[in-house]
Image 1 (cartoon, rainbow, N blue to C red):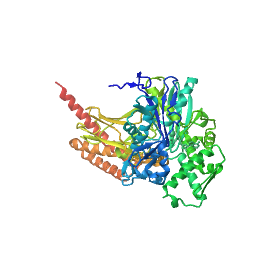
Image 2 (tube, rainbow, N blue to C red):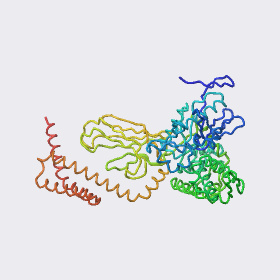
Image 3 (tube, helix red, strand yellow):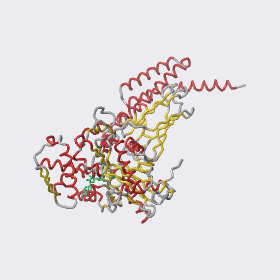
Image 4 (tube, rainbow, N blue to C red):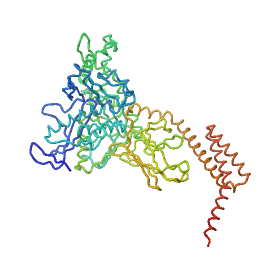
Length: 621
Ligand code: ADP
Ligand code: MG
């Protein structure tokens, strides 16, 4: 049954249910809608308050959650009950976060290193999904209060580098908050929508290439997009979910501690002082966006920093983002001169040095005409509008950050969907069995760029069972990958002759950090040469082993038709091939495979011809 919204302020029935766009940020979250009259996206704000809801949750003494600005007030007085930056924990396990442990002033449970992290407040435990759902609930009720109508559907944005598990966790958080999450979209994609739709109206036929540079509180994303005829296409993405304005704050704190002759370890236990320093550092940073220095004192500590000093201590972080920019350009196969517009997103792009460095790298003016805090939420609202069918001309394409494939013989990675594939998309390939009468086939799904699956990340595994007994090589198993618009992967395996099939929606293990994603990409480049050599060897071995098996079978089945001389020659060639395989010598394996083939070919043909002749004579009347 369809729900019908009632506009409480007018009493009228709303024909279409409203879909909100949500920017679920590490630091701040916002909700926006497409304004029904102006047809422009607007962020929702209560009368005279900010549109931004700090992504902070405070649990009072009865464990009731308080979210947003009110919760932020407890960061200092009650640091252990006040959770900030929970998005950094989404889909992570303890190992992923333990290096950043001192960053969090609340308790992160470390009893099980493999499973997803939990946060402990008093005697209660909360998962990052629980915490995110509390923020989403707050945004939902805010929107309902402002719009005076129920809000049940949303588009939510995530960093481009979020993996399947993290996207699924975000979806789960939405569900838990009572929202039907129609789509998860990348933040830079949303931001480009906020700019792109404007571009399209001004200039609809001309193709534009846009770089979206998003530096927020905890995450950095860079994306290259192509916009033509109202179609947005993401050409490539790169980034780091452990890089942002929070790091600038930490750098300022380190500088202050050093200047006051204090070791970090001395005061790290003083949670509330650390929290005060964090807030002061942020204040200093914002002040320095418009002035030459910041100077205050607290508890006999001098909190002085000049803008010049600030710029020198954050330069390494900005350089890191420029490295990502270089990579994203390489992936897109573009040079700076081909970028038409550079779009700035996220509160940290207000830092003048950031603007300067980005502008210098792209050798062009940067574009920051849309409020960098709101641009992602505005884009999400535009996407919501597209989904509600109001904006049919606009399409949206996205891409996968890592290659997806399955394990084949010898532990090799067989890529079905190369990295940077457009989504949604579908890919399939046929495989067969290696052993006679094989009734099952294990399908192991991996993500990564290396040639051997052991170097990649396993996403899922299942068995296709019930394959009818057939000789090796005869069954045809089609494996297909379907990646939907949210980037969630469905793997299907089907034996074509019998029609048996099995499919799973990939439930990847939680906990791949994006520094690991980066590492995986780097390692694949570093090891490319060895990987190719190893792949060639493995393929040669697999082929050789396969030939040994079929030859042996053939000899047993046809022993009466083979001469003693042929038998001996074959046995020798088989032994030589087996030895080459044991020696892991690719060239020798290939040579011995060839030799065995040459020896067996004549009698194999002779025996086949005899068999055919017999069969033919049998059909005579
Ligand atoms: P997120 O997307 O991670 O939620 P935002 O885009 O809301 O983050 O950006 C938040 C970050 O922007 C914080 O680190 C905040 O300190 C920083 N920020 C906000 N305003 C300014 C400013 N004027 N100068 C420098 N940094 C700022
Ligand atoms: Mg953001």
